[in-house]
Structures are given as structure tokens and as C-alpha cells.
Image (cartoon, rainbow, N blue to C red; front, side):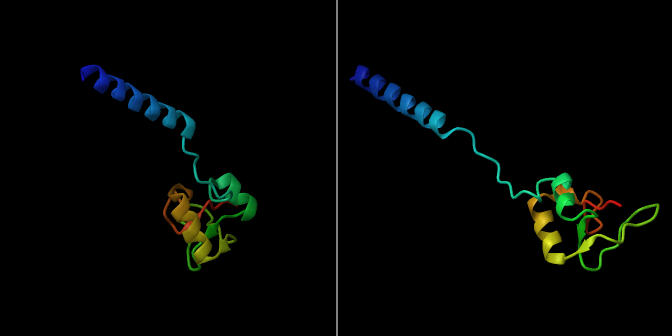
Length: 94
């Protein structure tokens, strides 16, 4: 009886290892322009922000970013690091 339990345990372990190997690593969900600022700035060169956002800066603020609340919220939900200073503008630049 002991040999039968051991054989079953080995078979289960082998099947589990095979299943993990075949599945491979989970691929990251990407949508393209939301992945990073380089990609987002290809679509919106000066960033994308909330309709009434104001750039927080000690110098001249960016004012020519694309104003679209839905697009900003989608970008921020996908990658919260795009708006590092939390001013409502993702990937702002001149």
C-alpha cells in the first residue's frame, strides 16, 4: 500500500511540474501608449491631463498638453507612475 501512495504522489508531482512548464510565465498586459512616457508622448507629445489640470512646476508650466479627462484616467489606471508629481497631467513635457 505504501508503494502505491508513493507512486501516486510521484505521478501527481510530475503532472503538476509539466503543467507549470507548459503554461510558461504570464505575459504582461500591455496596451501600447499607456506602458510608459516614451510611448505616451508619441501619441501626445506634451502629455495628457485632466480637463482643468495645471502643471505643478517651479519654472514655466506646461500648458499645451492634451486635455482629456477620460484619456488621462485610462492612462493613470493602467500605469500610475505616468503622473509622478500627481498634478493631473501624465508625462508632461515641453
